[in-house]
Amino acid sequence: MLFKDLKNLVKETHLPLHEVILSYEMLESAEDPETLKNSLSSLLRAILEISERVYGKTFKTLTGLTGNNASKLSKNDHGLLSEFMRCAVITALSMSENNASMGKIVACPTAGACGIVPGVFYALKKIKGFDFDTLLKGFIVSGGIGEIIASKATISGAVGGCQAEIGTAAAMASAGLTYCLGGNIEAVEAAASISLKSLMGLVCDPVGGFVEVPCVKRNGTAVTVAITSSEIALSGIKSVIPFDEVVDAMKKVGKSLPETLKETALGGVAVTPTAKKILKRILGKLT
Amino acid sequence: MAMLDVVGPVMIGPSSSHTLGAVRIGRFVNELIDGIPDIVTFYLCGSFATTYKGHGTDRALVGGILGMKDDDENIRNSIRIAESLGLDFKFDIFENDEIHPNTVRIECQKNGIIHDIWGSSIGGGAIEIFKINGVECSLDGKTPVIFIVNRDIPGALSRILSKLDINVANLYLKRLNKLKLTAAAIIELDKSPENRILKELGDLDVVLEMYYIPQIF
Ligand code: SF4
Picture 1 (cartoon, chains in turn green, cyan):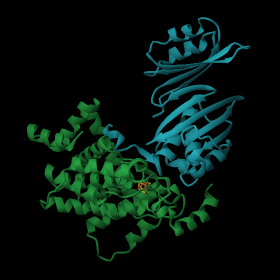
Picture 2 (cartoon, chains in turn purple, cyan):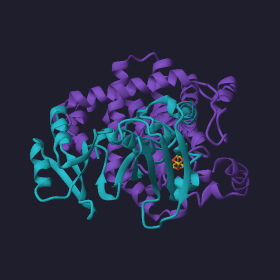
Picture 3 (cartoon, rainbow over the protein chains, first blue to last red):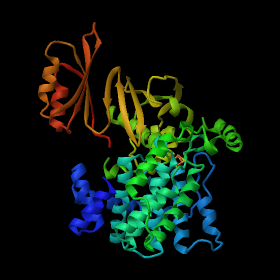
Picture 4 (cartoon, chains in turn red, orange):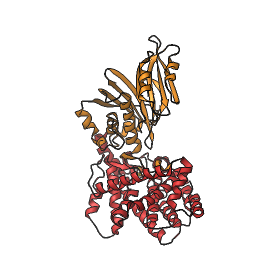
């Protein structure tokens, strides 16, 4: 799937973007649009339910390196974030810490990046009061963006670095958010492009190989990139580089990243003196 | 790549390859032996061996072998649950550079019969079961499978296959014991057979043991 194709189809058929994505998916994978819509609807329902349940909680994570970020942030407010953004960040941190404590999550696009898309959809529901049907339309658009990246490039940190996981999640979240807020297809494209460009080159460097440091906090900050990109796009600002080309560029960057920065825990923050010290301490307990 | 490979599944964290894939390999064994084993050893290789606790792979494997589903929140407590059920389990590690880094060999015993299953978690929750009781295969858990130990005599296999009214997607065979004249067959099917067919198969005089593993995800 290319974004360009979606654009042409929307122009030709005058159908809304989310419907075009569902029919396109039918052509590509012979998936019945109604069945697909139902599956997506139950995934979104799971996302909203889990978000509600884990919001701002404390978690006992596997390594203990994270677990109280969401609860700390929810108890402290310095007024730097809008109510909407705050809710999204707390949701992203909660979901991510829930993941690290073997809680139930929805991979979106991966488990490591599972907080970002829930961040925007839960905030849309909780702060802006959006109904489920509108959220579902946005979620379909998020899925379409994710699929374009997965089919043209990669959504795996081991293959393309964290830009492929967290970057993709931010692009998905931003596109869905923009669509829910009434953005047209150009705005959706701009939002996804700006998000992915902002996170391009992000390396995958989990301490010890575990999905906690820096993954949890990256979910929290990347959701702000998604929201900011959406606000930029909704104001009519275009992305100079079209989305399909941004995805190609991301793929190339992923290829040129050394193996040490692709989930091997051999580079980035994973090999800092502090990371090594921490690992020495916890590895005895862990293996 | 389909959209549902990008969003979803609903799963237990923290990692699709270290947790979800491990639950699925464990559950494959649970289905194969039709329940919880009496004794089990998980031999972990590669990154499974070095990071299994930090990723919860141990709890995922035990949860799977107890029959837990991909999104069962009790996976987190599976070790405790297994202990309370009296399951005799342990973990060990081994080295082998030639196989996928996320591999587990599960050796288990139920009602005195020993089974030995090798599986890898190959990314995104996808799995490959590549050896069952010495018979090499390549199963992804998405299709129903019949494992049969049969008498190794002329015509045995054709009698077995002719009972099936479903398309066979793949067939893996191996002679097990020349003296005892036993062989094994792993039959991968396009869809699940009716119970009646399974019963008829099991009743064949050439069939010594039969295990049915439904699609596990
Ligand atoms: S650092 Fe690696 S493991 Fe962590 S979220 Fe990013 S891609 Fe996933």
